Image (cartoon, rainbow, N blue to C red; front, side, top):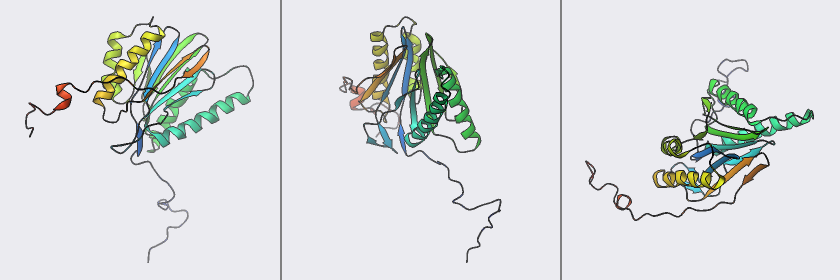
Length: 242
């Protein structure tokens, strides 16, 4: 017969606390940059169930308040939890009705505290976040990891994009990018990620935020070319290949 834990036991029962031990449905990279008039952000719409690309219409970019745009990599359900947190934050801010509204810097700071707080509870939200926005003519772009590591920069990327897209952005970004050139640069990054990231899907969205507001464009696909010999036989010439 199993012993029942007393209600005031330090151990408690197994149902008292639950943790996300491993992410189930995840999204891959988000890339974003500042351009002449505001912020551009790109993400594909894939949702992977483990190593299976199960969902192909997952939106991972959401506007918040009057000045902010959020993109997320990682566990989709944890991203939905973060959206609930932000809904409550924006509602509380609007309830003051004082003519002020939270800007992207304030929302980013809030997210860094949320992620770090959950990490300290050993119950992290399994996401890497990108937060961009424009307020009073000032462009802001920052990122925060699942353990609260955060910074702001002229261009950021999460997931595989942090390794494959950032070098391209460092080389080709400049502060006077037009909207068209900014889109082309993000598409170049997404092209590389599509070829190299097994979790990427050829269905992406581009979003922009300016002083006029947020626009999330309709999904579309990139033109690809898979006839390169390295793609046809990637193991050819590799040491130990069969």
